[in-house]
Length: 81
Image (tube, rainbow, N blue to C red; front, side):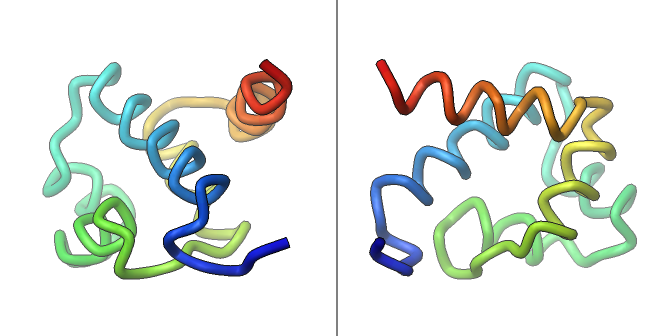
């Protein structure tokens, strides 16, 4: 397994989070504020400059009012297709 910010798998995970943010109608700045982080935190992980850990993934999903387990299931389901 490739551990890279540029791997197709990681890019798919980030695309899922970006789509969820856009679906929720939340801008990067507003999400960052909910997370107690600077806007650059969101910009860097969405732009592929920063790798998220699982705790950050959960916090982001919850800040977007999304169930992190359902997001992970969607990621896994879409991988099979």
